[in-house]
Length: 152
Figure (spheres, rainbow, N blue to C red):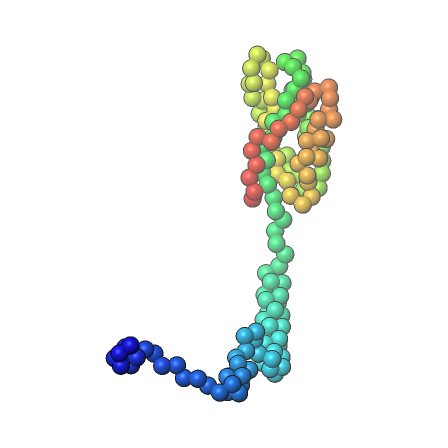
């Protein structure tokens, strides 16, 4: 090698082993072990949590989650008394259940189904249980379907 090539090579300074070990001890990769800083952080965190809880309680309780549901109730045949079927459906009363408007929709071959709207509180009323209650009227109801559902 020429003298020129050796002069462009980077120079590496070697530290004594004791100095290198001391420098490694100064590097704190996992956060501070200083208890005073941890106590300050903990106090600040608790203060912020207390402020958040107070703010959340000041707003009051959340409104109940509700859903608007359009349900199809299908009769057995064209001779089924649809008016009686609707009365039986509306006779079901539960806390968190409000019946809405209804209409009879032509399915075909002279058969009509009951399409009824209802509002339910999601935590109080299970739609599966409600459908089972409606289908217990075996004289009038063949099956039920959820045609549409929207959260309020």
